[in-house]
Image (cartoon, rainbow, N blue to C red; front, top):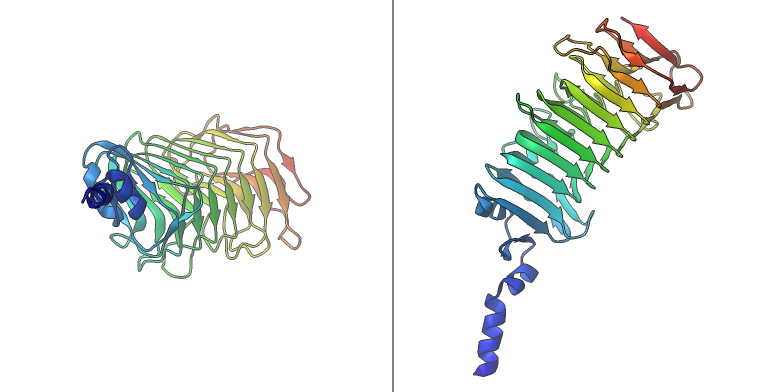
Length: 308
């Protein structure tokens, strides 16, 4: 009888549930087999969901609170194909969200914007994560002072301009706050831009943009409504299979919503891959404001600057 009671107690314990369920709310020890149930259990509070290694065809919508989605081992928790609300693997509209160590792959939805993450409300931090072979990597934003930070992330095989009238991009974000992208890798784009930001303040530093295997890609960095901030210590390799090869960094191509005066672009390295079309502008400016374009290392066939 005693052994039976001990066994029953173990089965009922949070530790046992944690071992059996892939999604564990760290603060309570409660385990879940369904990601949405884990998210909903946090309600308007603050919590961390630890995600066991595995491949998951699940998605979740965060409606409130501050939630951290963290892989138990970075790179081993893989979410694929299943998009909530025909949007993304994670749809985030809480007070804040952190995504740490997850992999998102294979997202496609009818409107052409299938993403690993759709941010709609709250600040967002993404670190040590990968976005692979989807229409979009990270998409969204809100018209507030939202802050988005992306660090040590990989974006590969993303974007499209063939499936819908409007293109999709590796990263496409819009807010009235700030976006910071650091120590990340962009490669093998499949259309659109690698980074497209409709925000007033940007920091883009210490990233790698490798367009060598890209197909039908456009700009490396598009700031279509202008921006201030810093673009530095990035490396760019422009490929040959471009839809638009005319510029690597393009400022205010669509509007002058945000001031661009003083935008610092310095300390970057840009090259052309073998066979890539020559004569692109490293920086193409349509704001007609005084940008702070400093010393950048450019390979043969790339012009430093042009005004359009």
